[in-house]
Image 1 (cartoon, protein in one colour):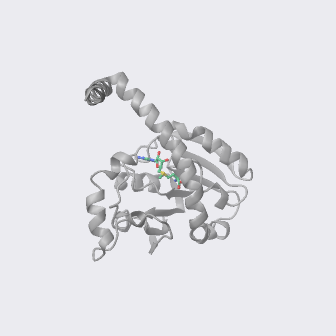
Image 2: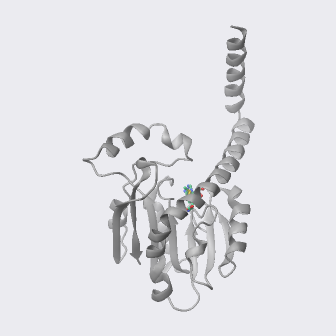
Image 3: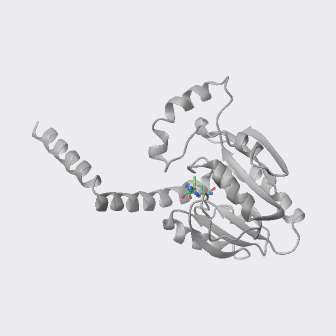
Length: 241
Ligand SMILES: C[S@@+](CC[C@H](N)C(=O)[O-])C[C@H]1O[C@@H](n2cnc3c(N)ncnc32)[C@H](O)[C@@H]1O
């Protein structure tokens, strides 16, 4: 019985500590470090399964854009997409989590033909450090589910792309309404964002892409060959400024 009291006392002290400002800051730091570590590992196994889809998504980067490319990758994480970029690409990496730094550098070293031009610590909704009409390509993979405001991020992407520039994306999205996954997503989404840095399994990104004001939007929905059925429904495509 004494053990229960000890556990209760520990939980209460922990809750009290985490409700103070320094407590919150320490928790955030640890959360970000652990999240960056876990994600850098998950990204590798996800990439193994998703490589054919990613190769298809990015294949026209080599043909559509001639000369050296400047890619803005938003929510870059550990840099899982570097291996798909054409040699000579310069990447401006954006992510609000500075703890990805070391994983990003490691990936940049591994794919040495791609240059990491800058790592901007920022959210996609507020990329004030990136000038208007300055990048050829913008990329998001598995990011739009985590952002607070998809409309703002798409507006920022449109602002920073050069005229004719393309936004490439591959994201998990909401399942079709007549499926069991759709109903389960509703339930799971109550706790999911707390476990996965704000990610929702009910993103309907395509609706915002359709109304974001791009000159052309192309996408396809498909089920990714991954174990987690809840995030298997995917959307990939491009949007041209
Ligand atoms: C699931 S990870 C995907 C990382 C990487 N794009 C990949 O495909 O492996 C989601 C990433 O989005 C970042 N993120 C979260 N909120 C964001 C926001 N508002 N703007 C930009 N990136 C964000 C996270 O820090 C994390 O790096």
